[in-house]
Length: 191
Figure 1 (cartoon, rainbow, N blue to C red):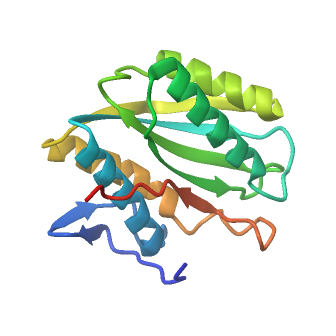
Figure 2 (cartoon, rainbow, N blue to C red):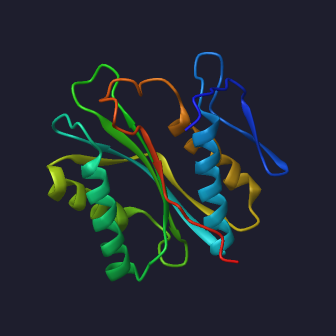
């Protein structure tokens, strides 16, 4: 991943300029932001409406790797398929640990908005999975869900702005050198 950073409050993706959560004291990695926006675009292209929720996963102990997040995503995929009949979903996450003893993760999850329209049941599922995996806690972010309709640029802008927080530079350095601080789904265009 490129280590270049940006403090620009706007980011160009395709023909559009999106407002992002960046500035002089909050630089971001444009390379990661591009991957996040790419996944949002892929979900919007795939589904007429896309349900997006933001949540945090807190760990009760420190971890050298992101294996627990990998396990969480694997189990989440299985549950989304069995409970909601969802086989395709998008996500992004970042690992943060500034002065806290243990790391936490900021997540954005995107699913078919025809299958899920409100976060309560989904958040119960997420909380249960994360608790089972590591006895950790999950918490939905305040005002942390959106429904993006395919042509709705206003909601799209809100989601991109909120998700851009995950691309920030700060509070990412307190980790083992081999441990990633960011991750996204790898949805590809169906040609």
